[in-house]
Image (cartoon, rainbow, N blue to C red; front, side, top):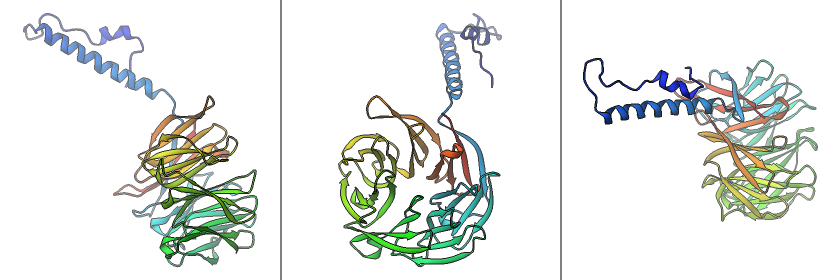
Length: 374
């Protein structure tokens, strides 16, 4: 569809009717004006749409990677192996982990061992993939990163689901226990990915479900979402103990996703109820500001280079830009996602953002590949 860039050409393209139409009828003046007004408004709307379409958004969809053979069912989290140019995605509802070659953007293997995989860690030194699975016995499964052979399992408490990997210490922290274990506390079980052994636990009293976590690189702290408590636990990883708890209850509840801007000491907590991004001071736990960010969200990430927060949910990826003048986070763009597309990963080294889209009806599951637009 082509549009005239010169507004002066509107009259040439859409001329006002003459006093008599082709049938010899004389139109009423009001009718002529209504037709002219409607034509002009339609053209201006189309012109405005074309102008908007020419404005680049923060993410540009450049490819979709088919995930053949999957039925309806949710995905959970991603993990990346940069040295091996591979991306792992937990196809939770299909009892599999899909392995994608990042050079060809094609599926190269399906790990069919996990029953309900949720989150993962990959140690490029030991070349082992660790998968948190609560579909049968709650456990962490260890797979050879080349042959994908199951090497062993590490037992976990009930509801083994969220985890985070520290690439410096090679330790993986796995959330488990709580309400589903009929306990009034949760555990963060610590797995050494170099040895494949559990090396300890961190007990979080009063918690019945943990979700997303963030690690401090310049110090020993770790932040953990306490989903049903509307709070964030602050943990000393060296002492392996909870040192503080910060409430977000006055702004929201059901806090699942988390992102961290360590340089500017800001922690971003997404509360599904009422669909809000809550910004905390990561030194004091004080609530700084909030922004609306949609309700059904499963992943959030902060890009320190572009100073953006990506909040992935249905029906949009909401992208917020940090404004240097004060604590402002302006909505930079809303990118429509696919069916149940709520889990994603930002790979800044590749300038790519990946999001998983469920199989539904006759439409195959895919991973959407976005280029990050500066």
